[in-house]
Image (cartoon, rainbow, N blue to C red; front, side, top):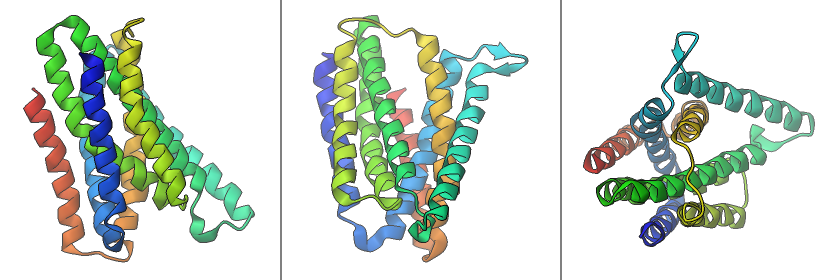
Length: 240
């Protein structure tokens, strides 16, 4: 059953990427929406899940929050190091394609974890499985949208972005199928979600949203960002 539901996530991810490809003439709106979706996924989905799964304190601070900060700093340091390296080699516009590929790869890993969580939820029981299925299938539209956008915004070719989108779409199916062989403990999964959430927040706040408002500081862009957050809130609420 989990694998069948994961096929729905596959289609939703492709739908999100297809939508991102079809609105190139409204790039600022795409980036504004992507930033809102990423912010919503981090604050309303990833962080609460990670705190629940890996919330025990380490020197007075929940492990999930420590890894959240570590993820943010890792993304920042990695992006800065790559930017300096490419500036020394004359990279255009300061864009570093490897940053986009790394971010998209992290989205693929996140989708893989979604599939594992989906399979584990169905192992617990049908009710839990259906709740997780709703969350995974609906928010994978945002994952596909963000994977394609993150890859392209850093200067990668369209074909490369499409390949990353396909990998992101296939990841939940692979993750769900893997649970037929083993079950991932809850705490490592929560730790990963915390770290990934921090990295994703950095990309949204430091890269995607500033780029969205750089040439088009319009109210419509801001509304797209708010709408993205609200959309994730709706998805999370329906899944409860």
